[in-house]
Image (cartoon, rainbow, N blue to C red):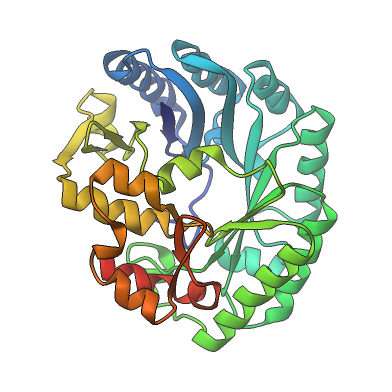
Length: 358
């Protein structure tokens, strides 16, 4: 089994973020962590846990004692000996003491919210770190023997391709094994959405995407999911389970679980969550919805879906579903070595392909 834990607290709110989050307020932290522990104790069934992913929000916005309390809660879980244990962090909210604390609780993967190294882009996004801060934090992680490091980058904040060229070069100079590169999405209830921010031109966005892909592949990174690149052996095990439409627990504000064919959605109200009213919605997925989601998620991966495994699980023939034959005929989908996957020429248009399976 796989576990996601959501910590909603942030020291500041970024212009683009649409995840459940609230500004850090010390009076809520311990109440939230106590409620989180109760939720876990009530729902967790003792399964062996292959991955833990603590996201946010900004989990490391918690102070040292609060972070220790959070990590202590994870001792409830029956952890696999080879567990992948990830925590998200912003650059400005982590230091040597917190890193050593993470190490003590066997956190072995850190995902850093970098977004850009460019000071103007960072200011636009509402980020408060600098290029030098990123270099310092990566060095601290490595000195504490945490080498499984990932960073997030956002492109398309403006239409200057030279920005992403500099960002990718700086990423490569850090010698870290994983990067997630996302084109800017403007969500309705963010500062960008409220201010009617516009997207850059599609052709420029595509050129940036191709530059990232070509450069990282040339430097030995595997493009294993539409937005994710890793050196061999450093793919995110936790996220691959999502893309395989596997089961997982989600604990915390707004977290989602997928267990026994149910999507279980937690409340996004902090006061309700602290008072123990965790559930917002519980939706049963019938076989047709499960197949649809397995196709939509699985085809995000570069190597797609294993056909025999899919056919055996769902007692069907994947080629006979939806309009897959038509997509194969048009060479948007390819079958090779018992796998169905998106033709790399059309991967940038992935959403246009996946809409066929909704």
